Length: 279
Image (cartoon, rainbow, N blue to C red; front, side, top):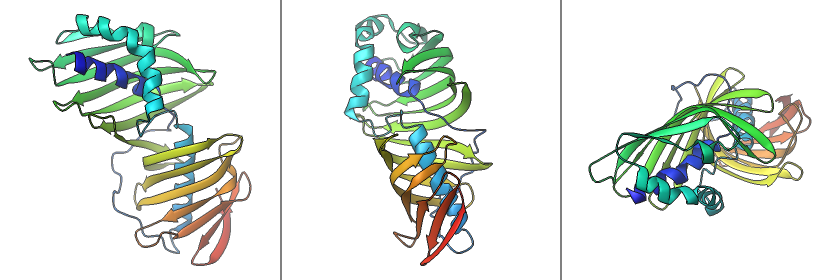
């Protein structure tokens, strides 16, 4: 049970650090590779742009389970480990509000384990759970569920609503990790009436200097492309004012090149032909 509860407490921080997504989420995502052509190139470009924006907006989720992300939350929860390991029993509701929601609200989870306490299913509920990082307070409502295997590997899904800076978003995501906390992350979101899925995200850089981003973005109908962005600088309206993106589709590592030229426009180059379109 000690190993199991430690795993749970470490993953609670991951759920609490969700980023933002928009609108309602569709489960019908085309999971095949996209082939960019002259007809869909602008749709592919907007998919890449939407994915870059979403990846940066939700970068607080440590998708690759970097040690720094886990260390921060382990340190925050370490005083709870011994207490919860002693108190937790099967089918017990455990209140972790004081640590996970330090600025108000509540968070509880229910433990349902096997007889030895080495595997189990866990359900957490957030009710106006408030926490602050980066100088901003975020309020979380919703539920998350995950399963821990005998090996120590675990997976979990969440359906949460977050409110920050006067705006509210809904997010659904899935994180799967092995026993060494090597994780893969997917996030479903909507933008401009189109459903997307985001995966394999890596982010570096920052707001002032520009972001570098690599990720896979799935379009609901056209399938996925792999995207690499460099020096992406955000505008106040959420678009990009500068930076470049290269797109890999089913056939070509540079199927599409995108250059952001203003906060409303981007230049899309396909087969050597450039066209300026709206973001």
